[in-house]
Image (cartoon, rainbow, N blue to C red):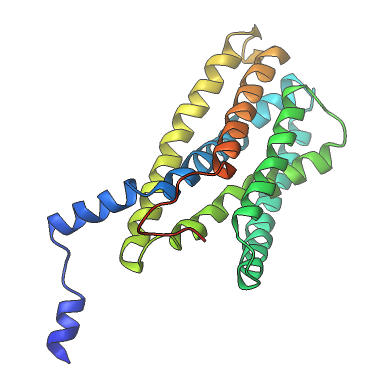
Length: 227
């Protein structure tokens, strides 16, 4: 028993690690999921982490107290979304329903919300920012789908690659949105609504294209099958 345990826990060689990486990046289903996760999560984190407060000030005309309250509401609802959507996806999976529908519906609704913000909609702020946080985490359910595409020995690396790509995308999306918004200044640290319309609208378009790619019939990977 001791030699078998030692063999099981031995470190992977460089060649084995490279082969595992190759299997992940050559998987068709992995690349069906990746653009949607990258664009949905990078858009959410970019808006929630920076541009939501500016939008509230420049477009909706909220004061600091209102901005703080709505950002807090979005943060709380995001945690609720993680719990609810994760449990819903697990229940559906046990019933034989693919988790991709939770991801797809959640992201689609988030895109509609981002589009409304792009058009400058300022009505029902409590509901808008509640849904913004709740739906913003829908893309993270994809990590559970990725985990079922690969053997257990590759799951950690697959999710690590996807997670890295999300954070790299977030950097560029947040910067890119800033470039578009900053193109329409109205004063010091103040920007015109059309700048937000361009930035938010562009990210809604990117997410929409990623959704189409996510559901569009592709040739399936030969070795690992999707959920």
